[in-house]
Amino acid sequence: MRGASGGPPVRHAFAGHGASRGLALGRARVRLPHALEIGEQHVRASGIEAEVARLQAAIEAARTEMRALREKLQGALSKEAIEFIDLHALLLDDPELVNALEGLIRQERYSAGYALRAQRDRLAAVFERMDDPYLRSRLDDLDHIIGRINAHLHRREPLPRGTAGEVLVCDNVAPSELAQLQAQGVVAIVSAAGSPLSHSAILARSLHLPLVVGAAETLQRVNDGEVVMVDGETGEVVIDPDAADLRRYHQREQQDARERRDLERLRRKPTRTIDGVDVALHANAESREDVARAHALGAAGVGLFRTEFLFLQRTELPDEDEQFQVYRDAVLGMSGRPVTFRTLDLGADKADRTGLALENEDNPALGVRGVRLSLLYDRVFDTQLRAIVRAAAYGPVRVLVPMVSCREEVLLVRRRLRRAVAVVKRRGVAVEMLPLGAMIEVPAAAIGVYGLTDVVDFMSVGTNDLVQYLLAVDRNNDALGDLYSPLHPGVLRLLAHVIGAGEATGTPVAVCGEMAGDSRLAPLLLALGLKEFSLHPSHLLELRRTIRDCRHADLRARAGKLLEARDRGAIERWLQAASAP
Ligand code: PEP
Ligand code: MG
View 1 (cartoon, protein in one colour):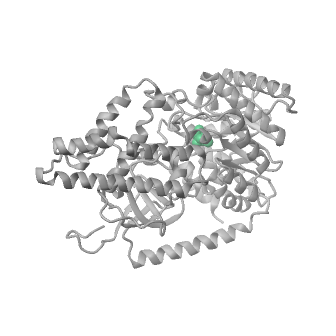
View 2: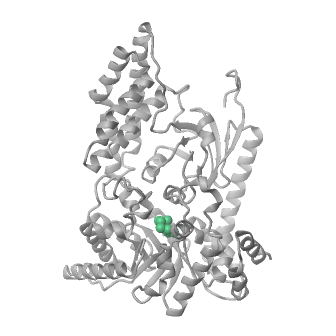
């Protein structure tokens, strides 16, 4: 940050929450919230032409930026992503926008920034009146372009390109924009809103893109182009780091590299406790890269393939062939180890641009998401099921259903899956009915789990949602802080109930929420009887190391004590005692 009198940079450290680990050093690129906070500002008559020129220069800079981005990404991104960039470039040339902006400066004597805001608000009102959800969603594109022009208007010094990379400092970041941001050279993201459990955070971890959330102060204080140091693990953000910070940064980099080398030795080792109990580590995957890593690290399979990420970055639904190819490649990527495809879990914070997820639900987390959405759109669901079934001709495949709240939903899906198998078989593909599982993430499904065990082949506990719905704590709301925690006696009892039901009925149970990837919690899950974990590959070796240091029988013997815990403190003390050498 600049000193008060515009003097030399002043170091400043801010605390956010680490949401995707990794260290990054880069120059800040500040993205202001969509509601442009630009007050009414006017220019003198003598300053009008200079203001128009300033606006034109900003628009031209945005155009150059889009052209450079397109060139850089050509071939590296999907056709659809490139089309987005083209669409944004077209908007920059749109006379409706450009002439109107100049008109506002000339006739109303608005400052360029205020003209931008006024015109954005006018167009937004038109967009918002549209009935078609697809057209309405084009407002995002308009905001994107307005944001770019605004950034150039307020840029104090040009950003150097492509050397140290950029740290995006913003109000919030959507899962659908992460891959593109990374391809643009963004090396870390710091956002004012969000939480480590949000889908953006999950995807950032999958992309190995450091992310700090809950960093509102950083957004207020940082300027474009300032150097920032980001620690995606601790959540620390340092603006204008000094020599000591930089030393610390390099030391941490070396330490991380040593740790990675250390863990690499476990690649080919079994995941077995000291007393010889084998534990299956499956991987959560959102992309082809995740599958490749899962395979390389010796994952037992893919326990959760989040298919919705295929739908998030685009405006048109992927057809059966396109989906089939993605699923088939995942199956081939695991060469014989099972891949569990979770059917579309759109809705809530996973809002897509295809217009499938309903808009304007009063309470989207309790609304039409997951299997509810699939059952609403028959054709979309059947298309996905057929694509998954076809992929099963290349290796073992399982189907997992998200947001199940009752037995009837599983029975409906089972019927649909059977029909998809029959259709694919009639086309001459040799496939049989696939194992069907339910995500246990709605409290009623967990409590009433015995109503599901005889209609599913396996279960996977989604603790991310189970915790939010059980504790009535929004997983995306950072303001709720520590209230969101799996270390609640109610959560542990429910987990014990579900795992016990699996054991009693011979139904395999895994945990695939983020809790499974936190190796500090592994003794607790083992104590409750869990034998199957599904987690992002980046945590797999660390978890394997922890499990190899556990004595299973001792932990099981301590389960009673764990379930007697009355509060989080008691659970933490149990964990400390269990982890003590
Ligand atoms: C969960 O809820 O724990 C889960 C794995 O699903 P998602 O995070 O995709 O909602
Ligand atoms: Mg979930």
